Image (cartoon, one colour):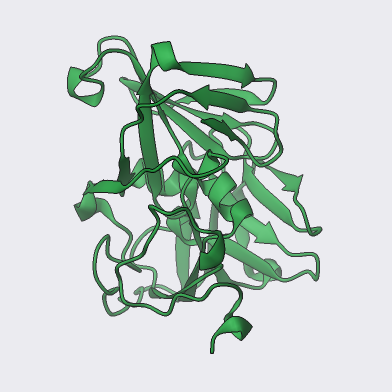
Length: 268
């Protein structure tokens, strides 16, 4: 199976068998992906980097590093470092990679959700989202994983939409979740982001140091931010899934929310 980032500056191949998909809701995966991350895995002997000119690594903990494309921000890899807990790779050294990066179906299934207690307050890993918890202050704080980008927006986040389009799958590694906000309302306490001009004229912003997904500016100027970047309580709530026609076969939400094949106008 071949996979790539959004811009094509990182390309890899992984030969079957591949581990089924594990969805991780830890705070690190949420910051990096902008919602929550998911990974398949393959032993290193069946993994190959075909193109790596865009590949950057960020050491996210004392036992693991995360790989992303420094040109488009796509969250691609998670790799245990030597000496890490062997339960992460029981068959030996392995590469954990984003199934959203794969080109074509690999016959994968969603195997498990992990770190469910760390999930964002605007959704549940399984089942319908909880009622929103309103922030006590007038603004909601957010940041990238490494802290090079710190910002706030007016509270509450409100309606959050999950997008399964091909671009969001490539960028997040799974699928994205974001909310609309006026760009002028974002207050930056620290800013070290860069952006990628995506198909359709939109720009996707991410941290240039750790790769965390941060924002999207559409060609018409409308602006949204990734829900996973924000700290609870957010006052937000996931309300719908869009562009499900582009979703991978393993990606079938079980939260009971409306799931439309395209944009909301496509709803019957």
